[in-house]
Length: 264
Image (cartoon, rainbow, N blue to C red; front, side, top):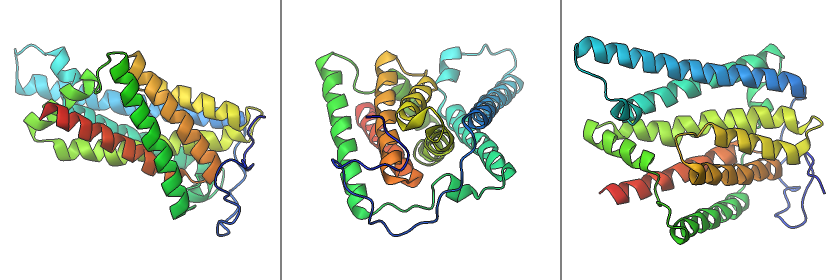
């Protein structure tokens, strides 16, 4: 049976008794959501490109005649963290403009005002823990690295350059907020109310979210896709983008801890 926005499943905790919250604003059409979503992704790419160009110009200016090391630049923690923070801010700004342009309240539209209950947090974080444990077990079974080489190199760069704090800010705060606002907030809001429905929206947002993580190999992208499916269901069931932000941040924290343990 296809999922629909606002429907409930008898197999999961009932959320009907949640304290009354403001009725979410009427969503933009599916096509309008898609157009603004593309603008947000373009802003994300432009911001990352701008940071990269600035970084390279500065590096060449301060070190004339020194050849660039593409691998070192591609795993530079300071560059990656700054780019992630700038990109998250840029795409979020586009989302806010889109919502304000349609004269809708931003927090209400993105379902950021709905505070999850303790029972919901415990249930969904337990599901998340099971999925992360299963993912690690599968990694060992197929002989795959528990921690992607990309993360190891970036962490070592941060450790050497004393930019751990900036990396943590990007990984645990700005990236989860920016990505969840776009995918489980804005895109989910508009697409779920369209002909695509909740089922199609969960699948599509998960696929798109996985596709922006091209720094990982096929297995890492598959893991991101599976987490996207969970976050999509959480967003549908709870009606709270805030909860998916917390879960996203928790995932990144686990990844950082595993990377730190491996490196140190």
